[in-house]
Length: 115
Length: 112
Image (cartoon, rainbow over all chains, first blue to last red; front, side):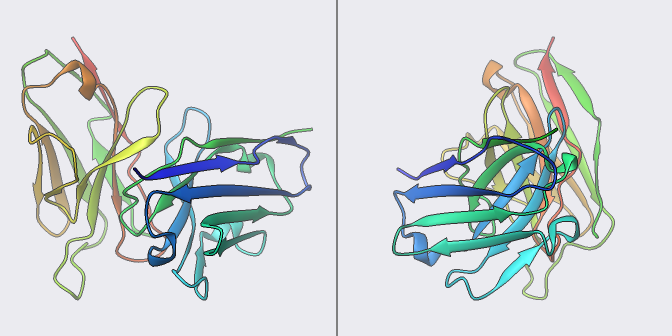
C-alpha cells in the first residue's frame, strides 16, 4: 500500500524558514517524480514544485521560485521542501504527491505564516 | 499559464441521478505525444484529494465505473452516473501539459 506521510508544518513568523518532509513507502520511490501541492484555507489546489526521479531537475511556480527548494533522498525514500523567506500567502496545507499524474497524496501538513 | 475554468461552481444532485462537470482550458491540452493531459480529482470533506481520471478518459485504479470523462482538446466533461453519498466533495480538473501545472477552481457536489 502506498503511503505518504508529511511532517514539519508549524506556525512560523514571516521571513523565517521551515523544512517539510514526506516519508514514502509502498512503492519504488526512486522511480517516480514527486511534487508538492498546497491548499490555502478554504481555497483550491495549487501546484508548488516538482522534482525528477534523480533530483537533477526541479520545477517551481513563479511565486516560490528563489525561496523554496524541493529535494529528495532516494536512499531514505523521503521528499523535502525547504521554504525560506516565508510570507503570509504561503499559509496552506502542503501535500506531497506522486508522479506527474498526482496519483497518490499524503494527508498534508499545515504551514501557518503569521506574526 | 494555462487557465482551467470549471462550471458550475456547485451542483446539487439527488442520489441515484447523474451529474456533469465541465472544465474548459485556455489552451489545447493535446501533447506532442498524442496524449490529452487532463486529470480529474475528488477531494472529499476533510480529506486529501484523490485521482479519479488520468489523460482525459482513463479511470484511475479503484475508481468506480460510475465515473467517466470525455472531451476535445480544450473542453472536457466529467460525468458521474447514479450519484452516491460517497461522491460528495469538491471536484478539480488539472493539467500536466507544461509548467506551471494548474488546477480549476473546483466544483462542489452536494446531495439534495
